[in-house]
Length: 176
Length: 176
DNA sequence: CCGCTCATGTAACTGGTTACATGATTTA
DNA sequence: TAAATCATGTAACCAGTTACATGAGCGG
Image (tube, rainbow over all chains, first blue to last red; front, side):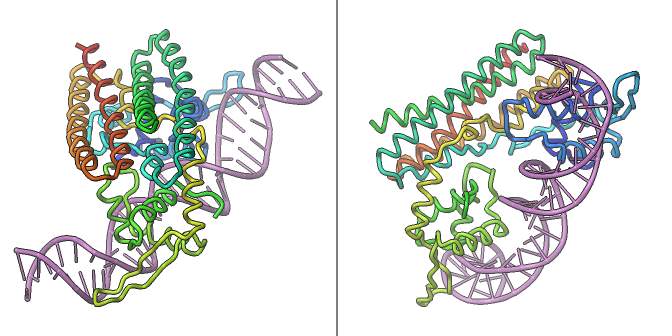
């Protein structure tokens, strides 16, 4: 295992926080996540977990007491060390500006007539507002649990959403 | 051409703003961009342009006056319409929270001893500061040109970077 | 004239996705 | 008892990347 991908590191983190855990449960973490970057498709998660297992970062255990048979995964010592390395190894690209489909479109807004431009800005703003509302709920829920770091994560997402919304408003103000 | 990918739409936008343009020049736009999301690799751009040409969104013209031979691309009417459609068709996922590698790591910061945690936050902050400095320069440069929308785009990126930085500071304050 | 930028092109790979298939257990 | 959820698994695909190769023209 030379270098963990972002998905691999994240899965390691999920196993660390929810261990012992099934692959299905790992998937649902992505499915329920506010970020749509990873789909949590079984086609991604299953082979990935197999890889981490083969590299000795995860250990598997069969559980069969009464319930349906399922495989539970845990971090090995090596896995824990790899997780910490993955987190701690900060590189320049991690601070890079991510791709924002709304921003990508703003660059070429001059190709639209003013009315379409306004409509675009309004609709994008509405979408962001909806996302912000949902994220606020999410932050509240996480703040009530004792998972401080998940709450910080959600707050980070909220901050970015609000920055995007504020920026859109500035453009709208400039347009009118 | 059923539905444009983000890269396809962006390339259409680049051709719209810099037409007539070579594929190489399209690539350098990505290479010099503040976002590292698309590499602008020839392996991506060349087949993509071929696709847009085959679908009639772009037209090609050979230029051979004295200089080295090169192919110049322009938007067709259909291409212009497709660009506008691509921009104007706002969907929910566009407002979704993007993947942030720093945030992804924050979720699992509890797995680190306090000292490593502090180090992580400091280093991530430094990376963001560097990115912010460069982006400010970028915004200034674009504000001086008359490309209002490119300047707005850059300001949007800056706003997001600052939101991420602010959020990290809040965590650091909470940690001390 | 040497190295850099401009310019074009492709083969191999990769890290995912979509879509499909199966079946046990739980809940309404 | 039907529908939803839990749980596992794979094949086909896809939109990119990395890496490589070539060569013309330009600036120091």
